[in-house]
Image 1 (cartoon, rainbow, N blue to C red):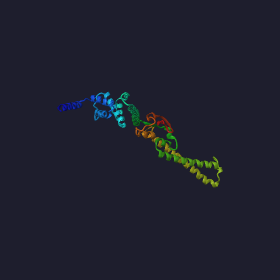
Image 2: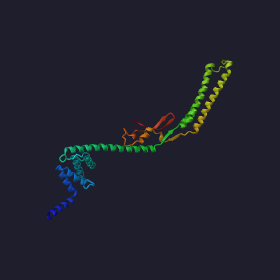
Image 3: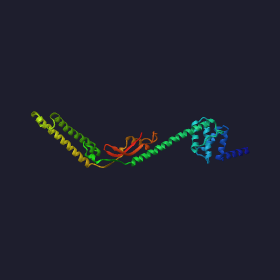
Image 4: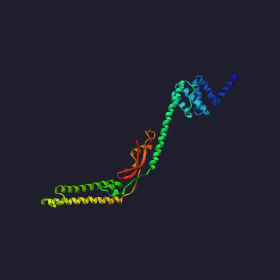
Length: 294
């Protein structure tokens, strides 16, 4: 009895003092014998809650065997999780066909394919994030300058005001000049069509007063139009600036919305490569244009 107790104590002590490498050897033996439950228990003790294997090759093998054990006992998701951890250590690793079943090998290859797809997506997300950051820097550092021409100040119908950005005043002057000049020209054309040019004897005595009133209205409207034109020129010259710096509101709205999109949403092309900055001719002169290609 005493010898039996001593033998049992020695056996327990030897088991307790077994090294992780010895435990891995025992797990291999159980695995070869298709005792997956015993191998699974040994492998979990080696890997959880912390990894006890020092060699990378042993760690990969343990993950592979644990994944195969999970597969053989019907725990497919747990098996894929262990296979993925092995592939994260060494993406080129594979299962030995002489040691693992065909089903385990197929699941391992499937896990490798899924991992490669996920890594490709993660790489694309990182790329989009980098492009978004670069676009944001471009937006922050981009200086938009609109060049303006001096001669536009002398054009009628509020052209100078429109160039200077005073839209309200431009519309008022354009409307005022248009109404005054069109009224003056309209009266002149009416009188010419009815009485001819420079033909005072063509006007009947009864029509003389009406014609005189119309001529006065023609001159008055012309003077108003001319006065509005002179005012528009003076106002445009006074507020004229050869170059005006614009803020990023001049950027296309679609491009600004793209900067604020979630970078995890895959875009069809790179917006950085679609961005185009360069000189642009406009009806008001030359400036720097910002655009993008579809």
